[in-house]
Amino acid sequence: MLKLRSLLAAFAGAWVMVLAPSYAGGLPDDRANLIFEKDWIAASTTAMGVTGDVWLTPTSVTFDDRVSFRLRYLSDVTVAKPLSGWGEMREFSLFEILDPQPQEILNGSHLCGWPRFNPSVPLPRYLAVAFKRRGDRDELLILVFATSTPPNITEGQGLCGEFGYSAERPAPSDQKPARKRRV
Image 1 (cartoon, rainbow, N blue to C red):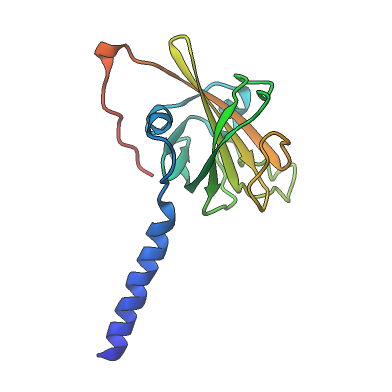
Image 2: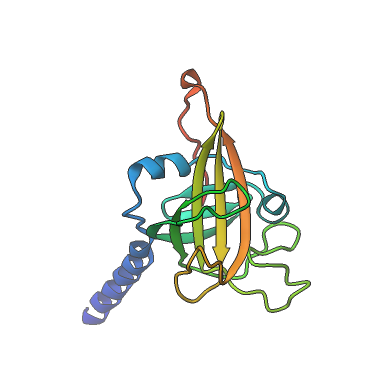
């Protein structure tokens, strides 16, 4: 009986360890409502060729409706000077990838490169996510870092991928609940 109780306690502890790190508390609600559970369509050339469309929740990111990574929110970061390039965004939410692993997304590509051309493609470790409203569209920028510690977004050290997405903003009368996605 003692052995069974110990086994059950170990099993319950394993479930807590699997579920607990996925909490993404701390991200401001106003920002979370703008980026999560929305159909983000690949808009940049790299997003179209590497990731396809993306779906974000507070605890995961899913590329091309089939490749997912678990996330943990770390902090919001404002860069002093907007990063040049897609959207010139300044405010980022930094996430840690909890289960970095080599995963093929589109056409043999991974978030940090193509193993066919570089057999030692680094694992993605952090995502920096920026959001901007532009006209009748919303824009999302995801920067992927392969550093062992949280990156300095401004310096770009360890940056291994930059992907841009967009989503139409529905008219007030067209508001629909977000569709459910499998994660």
